[in-house]
Length: 398
Ligand SMILES: *Cc1c(COP(=O)(O)O)cnc(C)c1O
Image 1 (tube, rainbow, N blue to C red):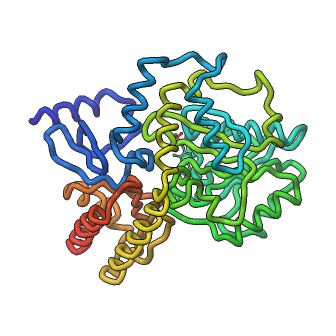
Image 2 (cartoon, helix red, strand yellow):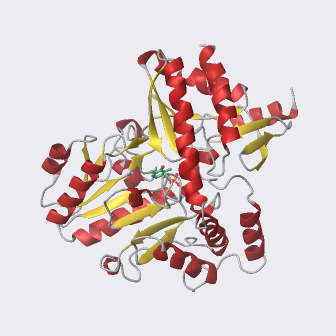
Image 3 (cartoon, rainbow, N blue to C red):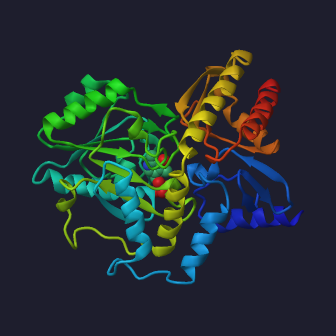
């Protein structure tokens, strides 16, 4: 056995078995390429699940982290710090929001949004409506908000006060609204659920319902925020502005940080002592996120994401024509895209992902019928071509 195989076996025996991992020890990464411990290279179209959007070990982020780690690592939120304040300032300046709350992950900021919504609702108004097929995280409240029963199984009793609306059906959603409702929570583009953008008219109708019934509209942009769709935030490509937005994945390019953004009107619902996070907005993670924001706001960055997004759509669409029996469509926005598999294709989904892995290209399966492509946003046309070439060969072999 190679050292890598020995270590993989060890790893498989050590952890609580929550993950089924690719059989590889990733040792290093640069840009869109990861390397295992035997120097085999992988072209990364997963980016640590839409986290390393500026690629692996981006020199400017590494530099920001190294500078900060020599100065100050942690003081808790009993104190003000420069990186955290700078980051909040940048988030506010570039979004609808006036105020920010930091935590460490997507689930945690969604948890904060759920608590904020309940406080906003007040006495007897605590129900939150989310959408079927959604994904909001794994903590007990966030997983309950997640509109997919498979994530709930075995964890009952679930917290009360969550209702689920069928995707795309505004009448069914309106029927769920009662005097108990305080918020509607949704991903403007569903990620884990299978890369499904919400139609603009649907979003608009939901905004109208929120205004009519005084409900908070919460956008979970944990996966699609931070440039992924070709705008800094996905909501900016719609005619709808949320009241609350949550961010995490790509915010720190791999350093753990999450942010809840909201307005001056809503923020005072929380007061000192009502909610908190010890590590939230830690100086190191914040310094990384400041560097991320600086890079993404540079002229041409987001236009580049849009251009390569269009390129990827075009190339993925060409495959549909070639492999009609396996692929039925492409959907997504910017550099989060999904290839929808046919019924026959679904039967081969895992096989396609594994064959791609053997060929040195990382992709995954989102939802039950979609191949997901979420490369670092710095991916080049050449790298897209390489991925497409391997995907075409893989599909041809099935
Ligand atoms: C990944 C994800 C989460 C959960 O984030 P964690 O950091 O894993 O807790 C929540 N919402 C969406 C849309 C996600 O994609």
